[in-house]
Image (tube, rainbow, N blue to C red; front, side):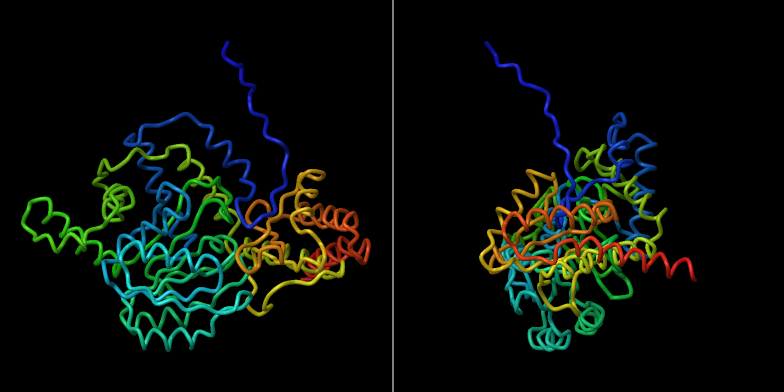
Length: 417
């Protein structure tokens, strides 16, 4: 007899990780709408409106701003695989786990990768990167804006200017920063930028919005002409190394899919696009500056609470990522046990970290819909209770009070202004 499976019951959770985060309720409602055909005029109209909203959120005038179906990593692969040819020089300054990801993808594209690394918990002095750009003369410089593994954020404006002067393409992974803190694509001279839906945009994981300018479009056009030549047997076999290696993640084809030509490249993830559309609408309705201020306020309250308890924050404060707060695990404390109890007893999830920081820090995300006063206060209260059960000596009761003071101070300033 076939076993009858029960309907899956989603347990209640407050997600305070660096991603995924809680989705906007209106996004989940939008995603439950009935399916439209991908060439239905109502759907293609929504595609155009999604591109228009993405340009505003990404602060760009680029013609091309659209999502790639897949997680943020799919967007990164689409961007790098579409512009990197075999033996291209690619410079990657990494200050956490995700710099290594960029390097791996570039290597898989056949690039000659020049990797720079700084101590985890810090970022690069832009002049150090600029000096390496002048030395290497790369075709592409690829960087992470905010690395969630260390909770640090790299200044980009000067590096973008240097890339433009060196005629290098500047590609940025802004997965952890878009819609949570300032990301000025055009002003910082970013040629290609990738983000993800599952963090500050507050849409379930499954799409990777990106944008690129005419400098990258020129590269795509050149490689597209190679593809046409190969298809018509007019090119020699040595051009095979210059072709875009992925069909699904070929930006030149995806561009045609999102253009009025509507190339029948793939079947669009209809419900995901409903969600992205609504997520972008919510962001713009709140206002970018107001949204950034909300993230800063909740970050400040969380940090005040953590420090008032008697715990230490990890990393260089001058380059802290506003959407992720890293907490040093006290000596002798099992960090995974604390996280398990926080989840099991209170339904609150925070994260550990990777590589040299595994077991040394906790990471608490304040992103998108999860970034709200109620979540901060609940997390601090539950965190304190769990730490007490783990025999950590704290300033009992001070964490939530310090956070409340931060909120009260903000309210006082607003009321007096």
